[in-house]
Image (cartoon, rainbow, N blue to C red; front, side):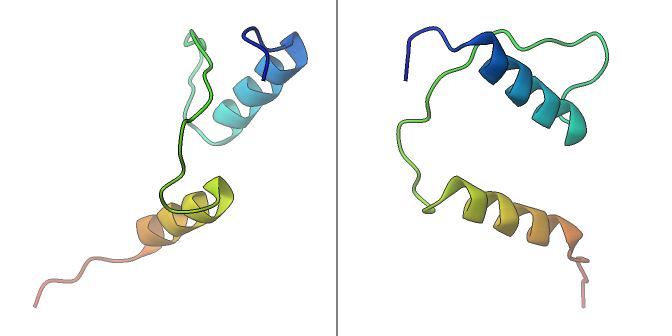
Length: 61
């Protein structure tokens, strides 16, 4: 990956963050860097696991 990502890549990342609710109006992306390692395997798999865990109801007995 280039040290300076193209404007199209920055726009795609920004759009994904907005669509996911992680970036609100008035906020901006200040840096983009490559993640060094993926301990849980694929980033898509990890994101799916996180989403499934957020949907679960926590029940105390």
